[in-house]
Image (cartoon, rainbow, N blue to C red):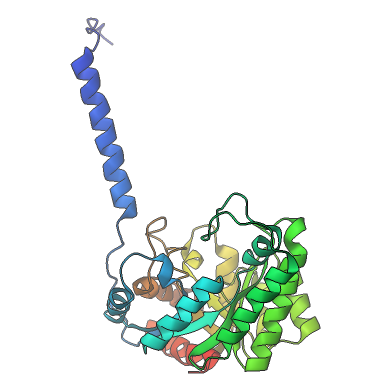
Amino acid sequence: MAQQAPQPAAGPAAKAATTASTASTASTTKAAKDAPPPLPEPLRVPVADSHTHLDMQDGTVAEALAKAASVGVTTVVQVGCDLAGSQWAADTAAAHDAVHATVALHPNEAPRIVLGDPDGWSRQGARRPGGDAALDAALDGIDALAALAHVRGVGETGLDHFRTGPEGMAAQQRSFRAHIEIAKRHGKTLVIHDREAHEDVLRILREEGAPERVVFHCFSGDAEMAKTCAAAGYYLSFAGNVTFKNAQPLRDALAVTPSELVLVETDAPFLTPAPYRGRPNAPYLIPVTLRAMAQVKGETEDALAAAVAVNTARAFGY
């Protein structure tokens, strides 16, 4: 290689230009990542998003519903995670025919109520410990909402061994058992959040006696767990993570789940399906996940969509 002549050191203007260029590139990259994915090709058979959080998404409810309907997602289940969010879900369902509500204290919410939340990472900000009395009061609020006719389910409840440490397990389990009782007493569907807690969730369902209708939201077990849940008649709802490259065990679980027990969800704004992973999720992206699921099941898109539509209506009693 020929020897090159030494280059002069970059001056202040050149350095400023380089910094500006780098900042501009980073800004462009961030804007692209934050941009909503494009509208997918519409489904020919309308389906429901069995689990979403419209209150955590940008835009109005009406805008979200219209965008979803334009691609064949004509119904959504709005899920509560705390008392305020559950009230919002119930109110939203009352105001929109295309929305059904579920109400609950999220598994991670129960320890925050009992033990406090000094870091304030929950939506309510920092909180002082309230003890069992505060949890009982919050559960009474969920019970009252669950009695409403337009509230179709109790959830998301369950157990989360990922975010909550051993000190919070007692509160989680007490809350989960209470939600099971509320669902059974009101004849509502139980919507389960199960994160790294498969055995304990199934054990408590056996001990308490499961409601007539149980949905495992964002199913995260393997094929053997899917068979166990199917044998019990539980519905398994699959989210955008079924499309992730490292999710083969999840696809194996979907493959062995009977089609009459399969639901599809976004869990928006989380778990955006590939190839849009990391960008904002919303109900209008259901077709992307459903098409990937149809490939795993070896079914046509229309056949799976028709099954999912019937399953969701049966699961939530609408």
